[in-house]
Length: 433
Image 1 (spheres, rainbow, N blue to C red):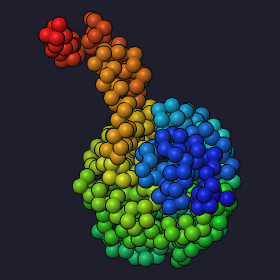
Image 2: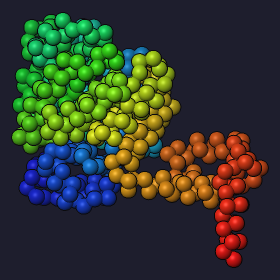
Image 3: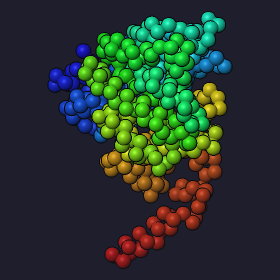
Image 4: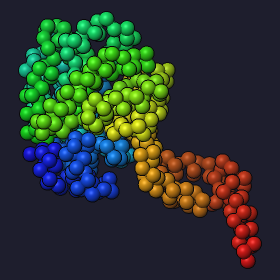
């Protein structure tokens, strides 16, 4: 049985207890959220890992980071190091988006070494296999779509991106679209290319029921991919995006009825003032299904800094109701990310997620209050312990250390808190005496 089926029966599973403890809520409340479909608990029956997390309404905003090989750079050891860094800095999940090498072996090694959720995009396997056989990226059969889903399920993948919302109608709209960047989703582009070449419907859409049976067997959470997500500000919030979203809303209902947990992926590039409306519409159309957003990236002119542009958009999206942020690294649009890029992407997205969580619930600000107290007391050790990046905070402080323990080299004797302590607070004590 799946977590959704257990929840509907009133059964609290061990996984629910672990996830609820992380949220500081009762397991019963989490069970109710899973029953309604407004929260999911991705956990493949074949993947044993420690940091089990739930994603959804009223829960802490979760963070994913993408890792994986490419034809230009294939090094499994480096990808495993990226996984280690992602876990160290607080990622709740990783997605293995490998597109070169022995994909099955790479995937199994990542899952085996992961203490957090693992997601994948099965269609990449079919496309990569075609390229490795010196065929075109779209030269594979409809049956390969289903087989890849089954392979990933058996390997222990906890959630899968399935681009089932693209249909023949989408292609006709795309032909007449005024978009600058027609399709930026790799999975979406592969499926559209396959459909055009074969003059057939999207197999993920046509055989969706069969995919649901596989996902139910292994308790895999479907992440309905947004193949038509905007890849530039110009293309945001257009008819292609919303036509797919309406179809995803139907697919959400079908998944829930089949006992399969489901979440929905959201837009990539978007002006700040359109983010809130997009989140509200997704939640409305998809009946409160957890919303998984890539960014959104809020400007197109910051290559090398897209971890910042996406953190801006992610903070706004999550504060308005998005549940799951996919981290973007400084390498976005430029190269396969390095280990350092992964670290920067995770931390910047954790900042966005935590900032949004404070807007959702002021109880999430407790750690910030602890940091403020440590600063007031010039307790540097405590400040480093509370920091998202302890090593960097300590490195910055010691590199240009102040002459005295109760100051840093920025303000020195002009430190506002030091002056306040010496004059205002001490004078109050004297006045009382």
